Length: 192
Image 1 (cartoon, rainbow, N blue to C red):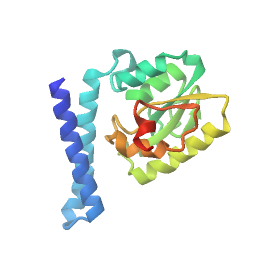
Image 2: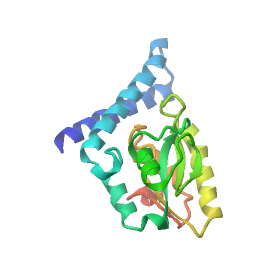
Image 3: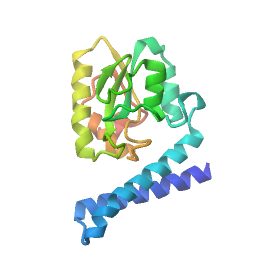
Image 4: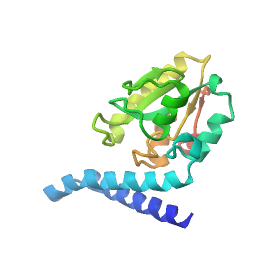
């Protein structure tokens, strides 16, 4: 859809701008305050674009490819890995799907619960976490997956929906993912 492509391109541009300010340092105090607003707008644009193309059964914000990949296996066979917030308010996107379908417990924003595993990409106030804050949660998940080789994990595009990050920013965090982690299309090849 052309409208979705425009929204996603605008979101990518805003995210890149925020990253430039962070990397190069803000020259003015108002730029520091602007980063949060730019990241919020980018997340909203991505959410609106994905909600029009997502599978209606999943609450609208899960990408259709994630929904198809996960449903290709029996729900009882997979642990559903989703992006969450630290408050554990699973009200939208993949988090809502995890709560409704896989028994993710409301109020639990980190780790295993039901047949799901929460990786925080947002804080308690539902603001997007910086990548360096998300990475340790991914590391903890990968250790859990390695410690449980008898389980299979369907990893959604955590951080790439409502949190507003791009696949190329999140996928490298999963470079050490064991074979029992079923990653989104292209994530294994992104970092190899």
